[in-house]
Image (cartoon, helix red, strand yellow):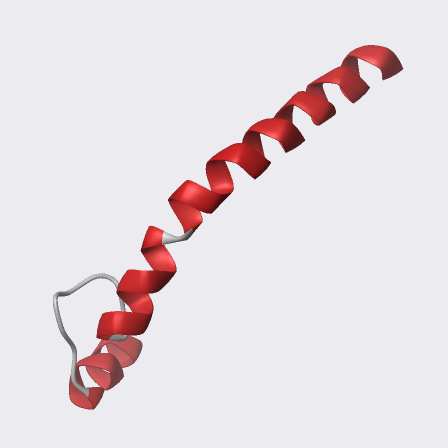
Length: 54
C-alpha cells in the first residue's frame, strides 16, 4: 500500500506543478486588475456589499 500511495502522490504533485502555473496565473491577474475576479469591475462599495452579503 505504501508504494501505491507514494506513486499516486508523486503523480499528483507532478500534475499539480504542471497545471498550477497555467491555471493560477490567469486568476490572480484578473483579481489584481479588477480587485475581485467575479465581476468586470468593482468599487469599494461593491466589495463592502459583497462582504456583508457573504
